[in-house]
Structures are given as C-alpha cells and as structure tokens.
Length: 452
Ligand code: GLU
Image (cartoon, rainbow, N blue to C red):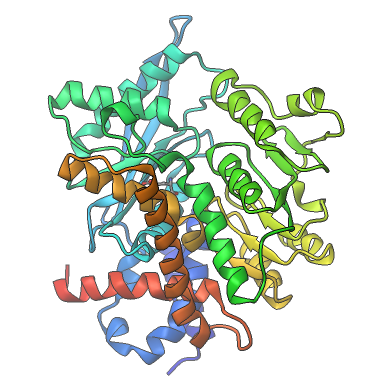
C-alpha cells in the first residue's frame, strides 16, 4: 500500500483538480485527510466505500441572485448560497454568513468542517452552510431587513425543519434571524423550527447566544483538566468582539481567568488589567446596539491601548482564543505566541489557525483545541433549540446550561478516545481525535445507506 503521505498527495491532487480556485476548501480538507488516512489504513471498509471522497463532495450547492434596494433607491445585486454538505445523520445544519469575503470556497470549507463538528456533538444533525457576499457594515436597519427578506425569498424553497435548518454566523445575529424567520413564515404560512438562534418569543432557546463562547471555554477547561492544569489565574488573549468573543471572555472571567484583549477588522484593544463584567457589557452594547468600532474602548477606559490594523497575538498570555475568523493565526503568530509562553489554544472561530500554525503549536506541545470540537457548543444548543421546537416546549436556563456543559465534556471524551491512539505520541492530539471521532459516526451512517 502507498505510504500515508503518498495517499494524501494523491487524494489532494484529485480534490484540487475537481475544485479549482478554492484554497480555503483545500485547506480544510487537507487538515482532515491528513488525520483520517491513517485511520482508513486500520479500517479499510471505509476506504473501499470511498467514504472520505464522498464526504468531500457536497450533496449540492445552490447559488442565487439577491436583489434589494438601498436607502437611496439604488438597486443592489448580491449572490446568495447554500451548501448542503451531508445529511447522513440528520437534516443539514449550519449557519449563514453575510460578509464580503463569502464565496463558494469559504462556504464549502465551513460546510465540510460542520460535518465533523455536528457529528461530534452527539446530536442528530447533518451539515450545511450558506450566506452571501453582502457587507452589513454601515447598512441601515431597513437595508438589512430588505436584504434578509430578499435572501429568504429565494432560500425558503431549499430549507425546512426536517430538511435544512440554517442559523447565524459572521454578520448574521438575532436581528437578521428575526427578519429571515418572519419572511419564511410569511411565504410558507408555516410556523416551524426552520432557523435556530431565534428570539425567545418565537421559539428561540435560552443559552443559544452564550453557547459558542461558553462552550469553547468549557472545552478549554476540559483540556486543561486532562493535563492537570486549571484555567483559574491564567491570562488570555481573545480576538474578535462579536457573540463568540464576548461570551468567551465572559466565561473566562467567571472561571477566574483574566481576558485582556478583543479586536475587530480595525485592530485590537489591550486592557492589561483585564476585562470586568461591566467592561464586557460595554463591548456587547457597542457591537450589538451602537454598532461602533472596538477602538472606542481605548478612548473610554483608561489604561487600555488600541493597536491599529493588528491582531492580539503579540500580547503575552497563557491562553489564546481566536474568536474572529478563518486564518487569523498565521505560522508567525503561532511562533510568537509559543515564544511568549502560551500554554493552551481553544478555537472559537472556524479554522482560525493555518495548518502550519497548528503544527507549530503541537510541535511545541501547546494544548490545542481545534474549532470543530472547541466551538461546537453553538451548534449543539441549536440542536437543542430544534428539539424544543419539535416538541413545542421550552427548557429552563439551568437545564440548558447543564446540557451544554455535559455536551462539551462528552465532545472532549470523544476527542480523547481517538486522540490518544492516533496523532502524536506523548500528548492527546485533539485535531486527530476530533476529525476521527466526527468521521466515524457519519461514515457508519453512510455505510448503512449503500452507494448513494
Ligand atoms: N455558525 C455556527 C457554527 O459555525 C453555528 C451554526 C448553527 O447553530 O447551526 O457552528
């Protein structure tokens, strides 16, 4: 049999040929394939059935025109998409991203990652991702509403509570979900759990807003515990300032750690004293209601500094939590964090570390929690929202918080199971563990269906 490296090269050569000009998709598949191929050597039934090849080919990709009118009366044209990646273990499930960088490559990488992430949660969810190259920055509320309505006027025919259940992602929060749910309901005349992240008045779940950030810290806590360490007293660099970042910082603070940084596309702020709950609430209000820039923090709170055009990875810290976007930790950033003594990384964003950076962390024995596992708390509570919608009930905050904590512990256990046997010798390889555990469940589903 060809060596693992030869197999990987052959596999990637074919994938790149079939999907030209899609670097983010290649990157995401490469990271997974590198860890799955050794597993296939020990489990040849999956190779015979071409399961990995099938998983890297979306069930379907739809793209559509989204026309809307801005406040000046100009007609604007954007492109919307939905990648329905894999529904072997449940309806397609995954967020919608509104950002100028959205294209087929980005959405295919996200949908591919979602397959493994959703499987890892232990809940019955397949994988999808969608969005548009629409830039919400600087748009009025009415423009956002008109865009969301137009987007849903096309998307509605492809989704449904048992078919495909989108949610939020970058640029899509509670406000946008509300507009899209309203339009779906208006077109179909059906009140169903077709989107998650909804408002609490119309079928949303408690704890969904906090889930991704809190979950990423719970996962960090589990990893540290397995290594005989504790998050209390540790300093943390967090990037981003949206839903994931603010709730990651909040949970770090609650557990006695010291979150010191946040960022947006303009740069990062560093508060050496660490954020208090009051400061985090101020950032939440800045971003959710006033829709301002993170630089304003440094004008408001003395002692804090703003670093224009930079990311926070030069700051001395014990913990790094990238919670902004893909490829925000380069190889150089990873090396800088390592030389500054970082002990653990937990990824709140999707694929925030380049593959060379992940290797650098693992080579340096930095505890590394990949996004598929670490940020799965968000989609996990989305899964709980789906269950509540189907049963037409609402669970209480204590029950949901406990379920989230338990799900993150279970995900850690699943990663540990495979991460001890595959990957590097003297450490739990959470990258291999998450990929293989996520793969195995979906693969067994696909095997049962035969050649489809
Ligand atoms: N966009 C989030 C993610 O990357 C959440 C998806 C969802 O809740 O469906 O997992």
